[in-house]
Length: 529
Image 1 (tube, helix red, strand yellow):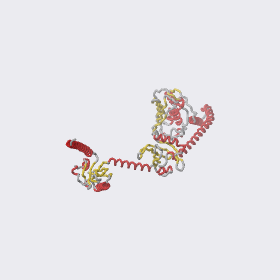
Image 2 (cartoon, rainbow, N blue to C red; image 1 turned 90 degrees about the vertical axis):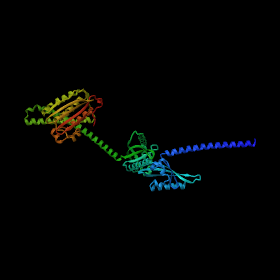
Image 3 (cartoon, one colour; image 1 turned 180 degrees about the horizontal axis):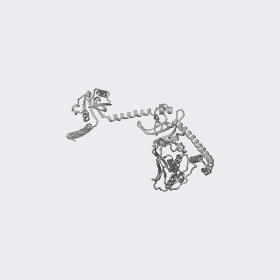
Image 4 (tube, rainbow, N blue to C red; image 1 turned 30 degrees about the vertical axis):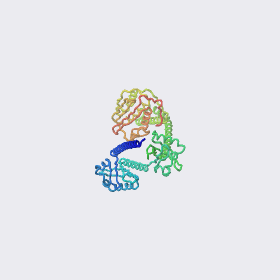
């Protein structure tokens, strides 16, 4: 190849290289420009404040968010010292941080409470050094972010934790927080420390198995798992073991919670040792009272039977004497009437005692049949008509037509005799109204009188055995104090209820219900109530 040819080729190569270099340079410039535009778009549209400071603490760049913060356009804040934008004490904090960045060549992070344009808020600031090719800091780039909401949340969390701690420490119950997986204690309050006999730092090293007797652990763990699953809230009467080995009993209520980012179960321990002692004492007392009540019932039963034998003889002799009543003078007849009257009262008392005794000992049985309640009410009123007319009292029947009911007819008659008889006894003038109607699946019977009435505070005791509203009234009108107690028992044994409404001087209303269809009649026997 000739020299001229080689020179031509060299020139061609140089030209090609220059073209390629220019092309690459142009591509690089375009990419840089594109990158610069992207960076500019990001910076200008960022919600954070992005700025640059020179080493003299003057602003050399600020994005639109900075301008918005200070309420001034960029050209009016560029070149200004940071002392122009912040209170002196805040500006001095920034200067100190900036100098640290310049001196160390490393970034700095800070959080400040700010007041700008009368608005209070919190910011976080990240400062980073900008260096030349020799590694010297030539400027500082900062990114500031509004963290007001974050700070509020932190303060609320702190306040919430303080409230929790105050309640935790001031609670009258022992409190333990447990890890549901490991069953180990996370923390406990002062009361639980006192209950268990451990120091606070010792509690945190314990687990559920350390504070319960071995023989009760299966039950304790079973109840704990049920509480975690939300099946139960309170477990009652659990044995708890103290550090010294002594056992006390507690009711434990629990719920789940989040504490310091961990799931936990909070348990509230209430020492029921004293209550348990009281309940045991009360049970012993109740058992003793039941024994006494049974003994009393048996005694009354025996005495009543023993009294009934001579009473039968007395009644027979009175019947004979009654044949000679007309031959007696006035005094003799009065005395005979008194004996007969008291004999009848004694017989009634003995019958009532025997009936009460049978009900309470479970020896009393009911004979169910289909009962025409309308007929029974009319007959009861008819039987007592002589007594009511003698006292000048009208018995008014206002009963509606009722269906047949499942009941013991003889006991229904006894109930009506007791209630209507009582109304006659305690009514001096006026009337007694008998009402009966169907009330869904029951019949409702009411005896309404215009008698002396019952004080409201006495009504609740009205159906107690041997109870008299007023002892002087009891002596005046007579009665054993058992009639209403037996009446209530007979009604309830047949699946019914009784209630009383009364007003002093205006009268009383005794109402009772009985089921129309009694599905439990095979199970209805007397028993202590």
